[in-house]
Amino acid sequence: MQEWRVRPATNKMLAALYGVSRNIMKKHIELLGDKVGKKHGYYWMVNQVIIIIESLGPPPNCEVVYPTSNRK
Image 1 (cartoon, rainbow, N blue to C red):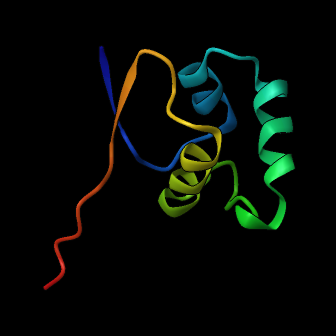
Image 2 (spheres, rainbow, N blue to C red; image 1 turned 45 degrees about the vertical axis):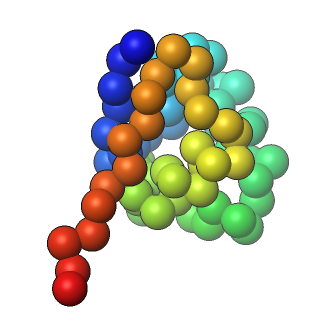
């Protein structure tokens, strides 16, 4: 099983992770609406990527590693 660390990602990166085309990934994210918000340039920020993964479910054959906070 492949490990994927959550980081800022493009539609292309997310599409490859889920094994779908960029257009399909774009449509899935559009269906989430205001829950995700707007992209910052070409990238979805870490918090947005977490919302996308939690809404769509885990990618097939992939273990998602969420970031840990270093704040005290």
